[in-house]
Image (cartoon, rainbow, N blue to C red):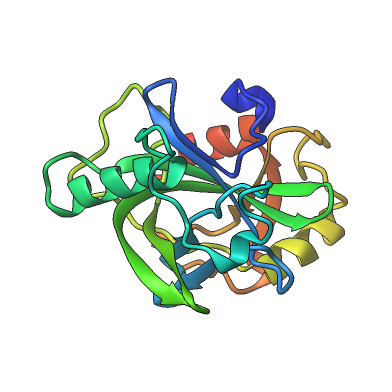
Length: 219
């Protein structure tokens, strides 16, 4: 994913990469540092903003509000995502396109597809204020040279448990060519044609090349 995005992706929130899209790293595991979650029957990701960096002035980031601004007055990543989501909510700007990568277990990341950043809010959580970003999963839109459609095609996010089972079954390789790079979790029968995201029998591992080839033949 770092090669694809052209950056090290050390930060979990990366706004406006190349001026075309943003990237977030997430985890839905029980011990994850942030409370990311799937809602709306799998169509929507609620992504929690990130904490103040730990340091001499902040020994326990979980006890202070998540920052919107740096001391200099510049926007943090939280602030950039918040500003963009509010502009989209008020229809002042199109939704920011966001690629999401999920940490399934140590050393294993999966591409969760493209999302639209459509809303956000600041909420009380365990005695402090945190950001909650609302992202809707959309189908396709991997060609960033094409403007985002006004009425995007929604898709369902494949549950982590299903992806882990498929990864084990397929041996972490593309079922078509055995590649181990740029792997996508693909619906054998697309959701739009009646396929399900909740069965390992309808999900397989495909490399990006074969996933694109398959998509080109689906009508």
